[in-house]
Length: 251
Image 1 (cartoon, rainbow, N blue to C red):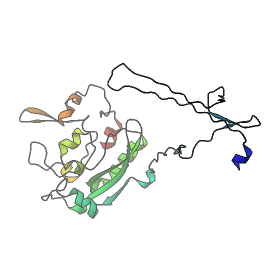
Image 2 (image 1 turned 135 degrees about the horizontal axis):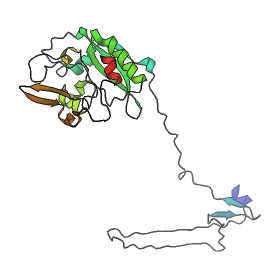
Image 3 (image 1 turned 180 degrees about the vertical axis):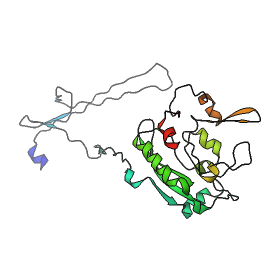
Image 4 (image 1 turned 135 degrees about the vertical axis):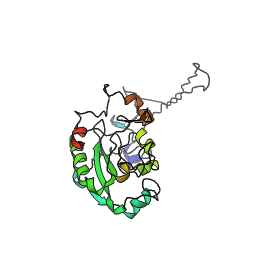
């Protein structure tokens, strides 16, 4: 049908080939080759056109295999707070994750005395993240209330995953500034089970709020990479002091 309607068609080809010589520093060779059919006509914008008998200009169609479909950007889905901030019993799957890590074989705390908290928190930029922690059932409701208030106040928390992601290594978790609770272990430098060992204490942004204590007359700061934040007169992100919202909620 198209061949019948168009009696005379002049196709225009403008081919440009640019060649760069690799490995030659600032030396380059450009070559331009043009192959134009007889009777070539270029529009003002140098775009190839088709001239039909009635002098109507028709844009050359783009081949289907060249055209690209533009995917719409993915929308950021913000979790609904109504679906979070709750406690549940330790499931079999979760318990398997904890065994040999935060819950060693000699753990004296009953599984029934622990709860898994499903929470939300915000980072320094105000982005929302899913968080989780295991705590003692005795403080589960209190922690849910505290972390809900921190979330609503845009209080910054850098990370909140189970300490089992670090193999139950408390130092590794704190060095990564991970906020956590239950981890059956002793108090550093002693044989006494810590409050974390019972799920009764929380490390909140621990790298920037290091644990400073004295053992045999020697001052220890944990984690190791938190020493620069031991000076509490300095101002820095994640710092907790007596005017801090978290301090007021936890005390």
